[in-house]
Image 1: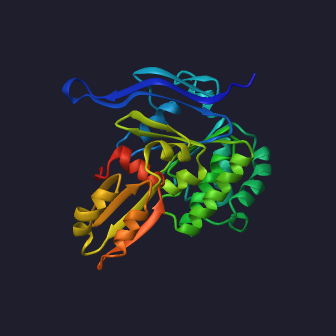
Image 2: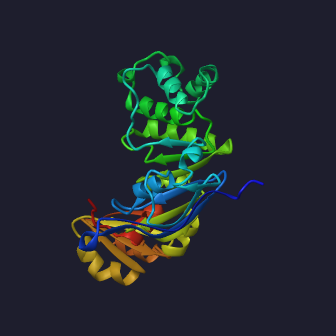
Image 3: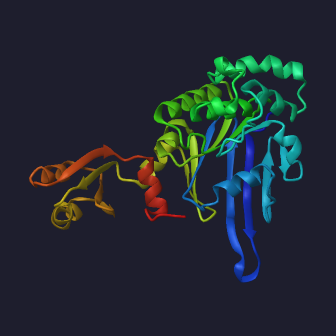
Length: 310
């Protein structure tokens, strides 16, 4: 019988150091991925995202709690579980001494796949990643987007059930990002499961069926992007900036908004009825504004704060 959850994390704790220097990195975290979904893990820098991925892959052992990956207990049975997993790391670690096709061949051998079988898979992987014409190219001949697509193709060489993707489009231009998104949607349509960490809220909103927001190693929200926005954020946002923005906010903005946030020179007015705000803005010179629906970035900033994290 197929298990409903391909990955299950239950009440996991992880800390580093001892005594007064002890730092709790993961603090009672629990979540589970259903087969065939894209599940996103969001959080500011230092929230525990990378540690969570390492725990799920058995690369780091938890202090307590239970992790099950593809029916295997982690970290005890991490090695056989990882045979059914693909990983796209944050930074490309392709071998510069090999060609595009050779990178796929060598990586496939790590899984014990016969060379003939890997060779049969390579054309499809190259087609999937739009790299057929680059089959014999060296890694230093590829653009950043090509390297990212090859890293994704490499993660698929063992035909995994679950793919871990750690910020897969960081550093890519918009065209390359959209191409990666299209490939990820194809994988989901083919029944693959994706566990995604990202700093791009539009990426999470486009791809994720469900997502978790974590901070300081704790779960602070979980659900579909649209449901989370409805639960935590007013429906509309008016961003106001310009030389008279502060004066307008003191007189009108605070009175006609459900909630106000200020970041730099921009005033974010959150409301369920933007018309009174828009009417008042049209009467003041020296103001510029944007009226838009609330989005996942608004949710993220409300839950985790606007201050910078190192």
